[in-house]
Length: 260
Image 1 (spheres, one colour):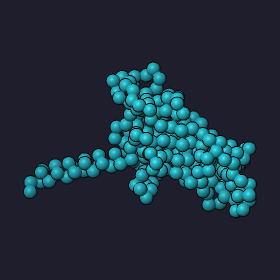
Image 2 (cartoon, one colour):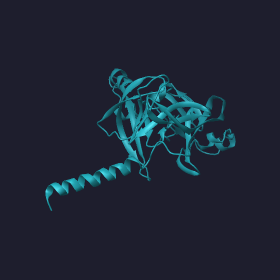
Image 3 (cartoon, rainbow, N blue to C red):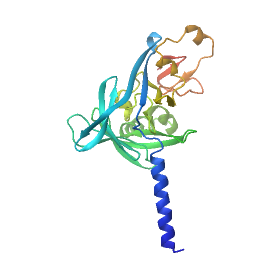
Image 4 (cartoon, rainbow, N blue to C red):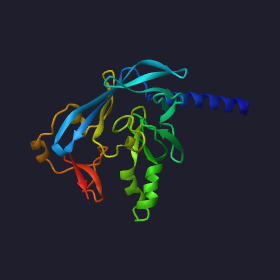
């Protein structure tokens, strides 16, 4: 067979496979709902947070968008192209990039948050769960400045810096705190919002098992905390192997703790 034809067929099927992969975990899906809990560790209480969902279409600058809502309030009109999620700020006609789940290590993109800040974002690591969903650990220009000005001169290894100065984009989901906190925790680093669950209809597609109790708006029983050994987690809910040695805010047995 002619080599040109073979190359064309290979490119054709590669394009199909890429298109299927791009659509495997869409951000915009009918019936998708994000549940965000509010953690109040200083008073040992939890409260119900917010629910995000889609509510119909709207047209901005000739572009058909979904109305992304939070408890009846418009978050932003958004649309999706391949691996990229775009949104419009109020009174703007040019879309801004919210997420690009297709970037790979070595690439970077400029993303904007809802308040209008734009930062260049870089991929630190990418992990894939058992379903094939990509988790991109991201750092941005502000984090890079902290590395250059503070961490690197003090001799800290990159891994320790990345553990506390990166954040996660979850393919088709958004961010692990509020789903739109795409850069620098959306300007709210260390706040108590936690994405606990995402559903499409009755199907759970994401769940933060450690913070699942937040969703129900109940306090953690003291007897439960006292019945097990102390456990430490970072603000994304990741369990730490031991007592943290770096300064920062952590969660110990369901309570926020400041390590000085």
